[in-house]
Length: 364
Length: 102
Image 1 (cartoon, chains in turn brown, orange):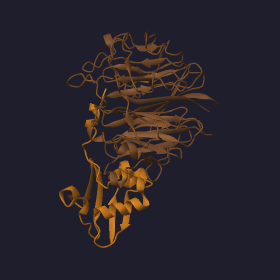
Image 2 (spheres, chains in turn brown, orange; image 1 turned 135 degrees about the horizontal axis):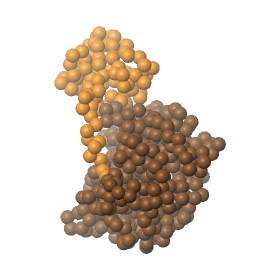
Image 3 (tube, one colour; image 1 turned 90 degrees about the vertical axis):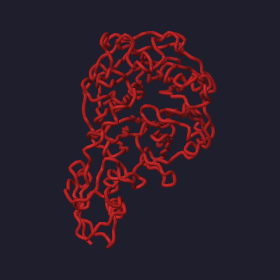
Image 4 (tube, chains in turn green, orange; image 1 turned 30 degrees about the horizontal axis):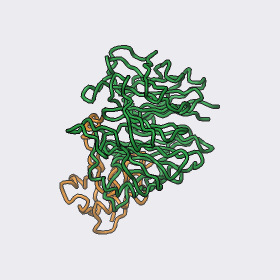
């Protein structure tokens, strides 16, 4: 049986929502992973059996990374710990921020991003990871500073065609890219303003990027939601231009690329960094179908007033259905879903703990 | 030498719900050695108590009898023969999470 699954990582455990009727109705199950906060999750559909991943952490008992090969019925925490900083780094894992399955033709390749900012590579489908030394030893590292959520590598974008290329993003630090399989990394932030910096400058690096996305069929084009500023790059991050015109605010945390339609992206604007609310208290998704040149408000079925919840950077995602589904979860514990590319929405979960991450996919 | 380790409820998922662990440690062992011994049989349990550097997690306390090892020599605190060891979650913890953006 084929079903759509949504993983919902929250401050107090992981829930799953599943739909057997093309996302018209949903069954919610959980929580898994106890009282752990789940800041990263992933659905890996590449193997014969879908594998779910969860990066969980307890304020008392520390972080852990687990996987499930039975759609969440049971979770396995491998030994030794999948992600463990080598002794010579004198660092310790604080949190897994991102879990990114690799391309379809490398079904055992999985990437992870962590706090402290580090990139990890697994060649055994997430059972064990190796630290990317090139990024760890980067001379800029002493100048990367923690954002409000911590010093985290939160975005991993493997190149869809060239396994030697990748973009990553950190808060703070900005976007970095490699073209030599991770041996060396260069900042890719030209044109992105550091509006939170004293002189509003455009530094080479140090930006507080919140999320970056791209479409696999158009790898040269990147979209970024920054701490002040919404941007597009048409040259793989060599340069960026603002695409914030037409949005009710250029602050926000989310950027989702439609996996079916190159150039279509979704954001959830907030008023400003010092006013982190949906403009006018109305919950609205903004969609661009022309790579950010124009934006359309999409709010049918979303709360139209008194909406003051916010959405964490990884709590918005797309599924892999032919007609794209979009999902987002709020810090007030609601999850909203659209089965029609954002045209209309329904609330598929409510009164959960605050949602930290959401991932969706088709499993069987 | 024999040491009895009392396991808090939150960690019994790692001990098949056992409330205690009986350890046979070399004479002269300290807390670090005791935790290494726990990790040999139960690495996931050790990870809940200390990080990969071996440092005690911020909100976890280890008591040798009535004494918090943080008030002694930390991980170098001696574990005497016949000691009763308590692994205790502090009543602190959690508050810092509320500050996370957005």
